[in-house]
Image (cartoon, rainbow, N blue to C red):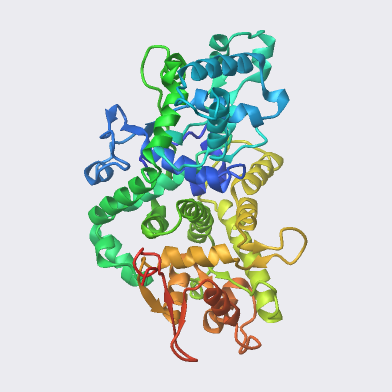
Length: 547
């Protein structure tokens, strides 16, 4: 049996029997948006947590190192997400589809609104009325909606600008409620499910566990990996205790960056006039706090988890607009999913060592072509490289070491399992997510290849270079290769030809990365010292920008 973290028993009669989940962990899923990966990740971090029956310190975003390194067997990581049902109702029901507004929901919304109106006190001579103030508050929180505009109001989510807006998933049981002729809000509360994983589908949990998996490694293990892979990380970040402390501080600053008044308003609108709803959604019938159990990640995933932790730290510490920071963190989560699929796929692929030599430390490579596709040779290599990435994930899922299903299954049943694995958790998930963030294009039609957009260029700078620091252009390309497997200059692309299934070439038809320097220059991070020497600067330390 392969090692996993946390050391729990696999549910081989349930979802763990899928071969892709056995390979990548429980679970990455195509219906989860990039925003929801980040929301779920921060939701686990900010919620009350426990391991087995032991609670973790309430304000801790991660378990301490002692617990991480002595995790009790058969003990899952559980967290207690808030539902914030009243707040969602107040903010989202007005913009939701009419057919999703059950009569009990509308009635409760009207009741809440009347209570809010009675509590609003305006200064003498105010030009605004109480209803106008209430409408302004509704529009304010509607503006914080991150995802779910086409869903039932309760399945929508806020962008994670503050702790008070982090909410678990709630799914309305419309069919059962209609069949049971639900009329009141009190009756309706029994028809909300807070345990389904439809949109917050465990992807953020898995990313969180990967970081925990990395932090529990000993310092000498991380140091050996950093030197071998050439990751260019500062020495203090190679110490797990330092990295844990810095990451907790950085993520806490994000969750606390919003003015306190927003969180106070959220708490008031959620619980200020109706505490009963919170008691019935955040607690079980016996009065105990409601907890959700996390899944697991592969033990081997600590390497990509370590990279992810450092990248989150750099982005969190960058002096950029808070909304842009959230966008960059979303990208970090999406890239981490793609990197995880490729790195784990490489570990279980049947490629020879000579082929793997052309790849990065994680044994895969993404060959980038210019956005317009002007270099035809590199464009074709990138297309073949993308196909090779998909084949590697496809083949890894079928590794004979991964046992699944029941004895006596016929070939048709086995193929059905594999098709489901490919579509939901394998190479099709990779393609779907890579296209969403602009790493693969075109969106439709033949000729898909790896490419970049301005947002991804900015992300790579923020994720690799500490705020306020600068490195040479060649070092930057080396770090892109080490962290993400990105190859974009002639030397790395030529070495990657064997990995991509392309004959070795002596020339690629001219400079392969001029387009990249142009994009860096347009982003304001390129410093040209001479025709042959440039620096890449991350100016977002709050000091460099002023100087």
